[in-house]
Image (tube, rainbow, N blue to C red):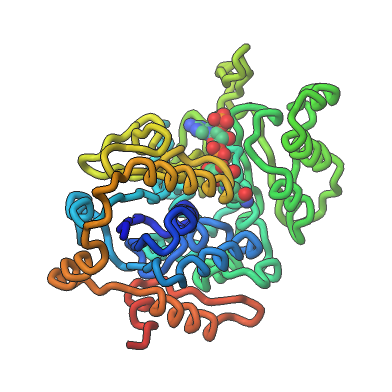
Length: 433
Ligand code: NAP
């Protein structure tokens, strides 16, 4: 019997477990260890609450989780409750599927002023991540700047722009729903350091902005290359740019405005004791397509700045790490003897949820090739349980999670699939045992 530990129960973790089941059939036992008492990682805490169709992929992971040879071992933090070395002694292989939950810092003067918030924190706040429940982002201000031109910037701009009615059917947590309902923000400035052709936004997500109840996206067509140049873009990007161009023809008259400022590189954040404005330098593209400053600056008055400039995998002491790319150093998912990584921990934070699936299948094949005939004699989960029990760790099982999930559904606002528990103690209490 092969014993495999997967650390992290987000998409990359579940695709790996699914691939290992296909690889080994009944001859494998997989423990999915998560520091949270609830599974699914990015699906629960990252995917926007108004994108329920994307979140529905968790039903596929549930099938894997309910198989006899897969266990969810929640509320267990690797590094605190158990070490990698201890797991190495218990399991034939360890797969790090820890995602990239940390913000890349905005390294400009004033980037640490109160009111500058990373997207991991802001998204975590509206998605009920226990670490960010007390964030209290300043929403009693007239304007917000959203830095970055990726899909996370779009999520953040859209969430700031929506009316309470538009959160119908979402699972936005109560504290964020009421705070956003009271928000005074009317101007949302999405700042891209490069141009419309260099955005990292996908068409469906961008198109949504054109249909908001009380907000209008605004672009300046002077920022765009000639229309004919759009033909040179790959089809998805062409569609995204075409949505942006269409925004120029939308009628105004709504209360909120989402301004797309292109060629706008934030150079400093200013304010007495909190954010009051972002100073932006106009850029142009060099021949390699990189943004270079022109020396011309302007200021955007705002009381909230959300940086959406990418994420990092948290390093684990003793495991090789690529600081510049914010991920584990690896060769096609292999870190070292018996140690592998998948998903954002392997590639860095890029791609859609489905991009993680091939990673899982590739790593399962590598494990099968690497594990020699001597493998299959390690103790696996029984040894882990004994060790955690001796340390007084309160493990959450998948059956516990199902009770937590039912309790969240039972207390949901009308029309919402669930009202998430935010505090860890509440989650543990909802197990009913
Ligand atoms: P991303 O797609 O890598 O975009 C990051 C953006 O930040 C880029 O526009 C980048 O500009 C900009 N940036 C980086 N450093 C900057 C700096 N110092 N100053 C100003 N701008 C800076 O990252 P993301 O938006 O965090 O998304 C992560 C992944 O999740 C992506 O693959 C995304 O598609 C995916 N995602 C998907 C969905 C969805 O499908 N609905 C939703 C959310 C996220 P440059 O291009 O100039 O570097």
